[in-house]
Image (cartoon, rainbow, N blue to C red; front, top):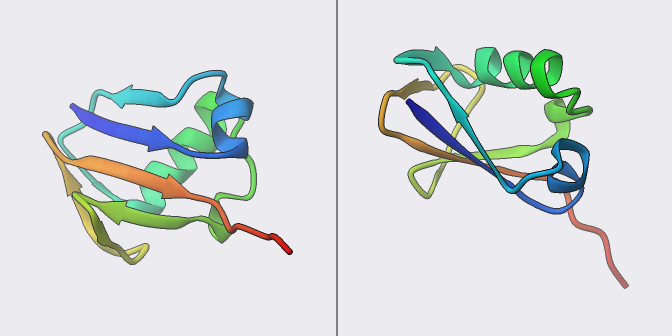
Length: 77
């Protein structure tokens, strides 16, 4: 089980702040593709990803028990 934390507009799109994914071993890119298709999340290729509070690359592995944070770009003024 992988816990995915959503922030900002991703929370609004999914209608929740956390998603539980029943998986043992996925790459970051595979998780993003799964979330795009299952939860209709968009533009995940522009989202920063952290695994267990450390920034991750699309090729990094996510294992059961990990917590993944998806952090969209922030704009402000």
